[in-house]
Length: 267
Image 1 (cartoon, rainbow, N blue to C red):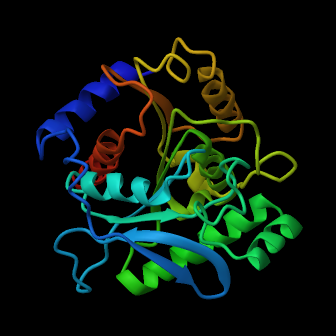
Image 2: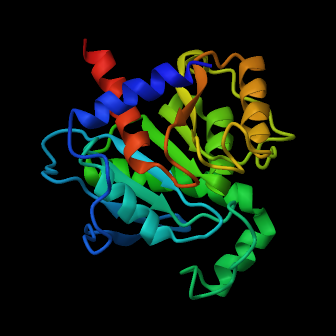
């Protein structure tokens, strides 16, 4: 594990730009709820400061946890995007736990959509929907082809499914305090695309997280996912432990890591 070294590099990357602490909660970025043609999945999107159609922009898909605070998740990553100016996308997913499903105060989906989800399964709905959403975002907002993907807690189920099934579509993946129970992965072949070998995967956790951190019982889920990934040829995978942080989605640290990858490629 190179956690200490990488955490130090992240600290430098964040310190070199804007302050690491998120903006006050009252500072709400412009986040819009959108629909996508050809699929009922909806998503929140926020554009970076200075966005223009004259260039291509990185896309960060930030997958929400079981709390299902989709808009709040989009806002927190949009605030942190000053570290890594990028298009923030938070799809309204259903693989992140059963609680709240069919509740109109949580989900913007109709009864017909829920019937479809029950028929085809949450994994098919989310995997197909995420692909459609990202295609639409690329076209509408001049997004880059490969995306940066992160997910907190139960949001990591879809992170791992995408890592194992569509690595060629990813620039990097960063599950944070991530669950792994084989959801949407077991029973399906893992991709043999050669891009998987060099795909950067970092499992973030707060050192003070007593459940998902290195000393917590749920950290074993990260180790399970790491072991499976390595056995399938994913070679650039490691854990990142952030000192002084607890059970939080770490948007500043994750986006600083994504930014560091681009700086590394430009040298």
